[in-house]
Length: 87
Image 1 (cartoon, helix red, strand yellow):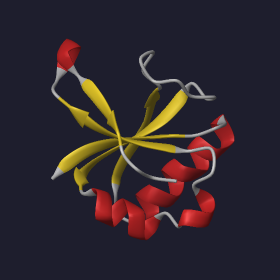
Image 2: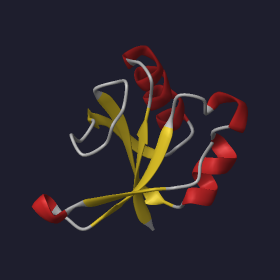
Image 3: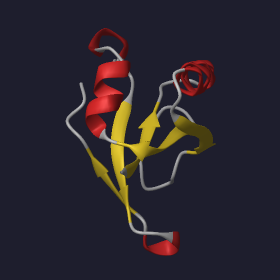
Image 4: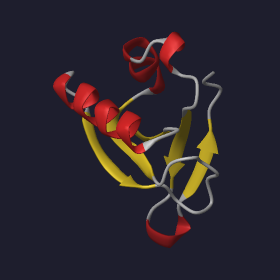
């Protein structure tokens, strides 16, 4: 399983997203959006122990405007964020 970062266009959307993902059984928590990622909101949702297909199935395409999905690779200071084809 992999770790992903879901960015949003506002704090309210990020907080709602966290609640929805947790209620659906995902391991998710809000984190600061990394400086290396350009996003309208300073909060992002870190989702671990899942795969992109599960996220795609849960989060419908019509709700993805203003969001971004990234695969987190590496750990600590050597983290790299790869943007995934999402919208």
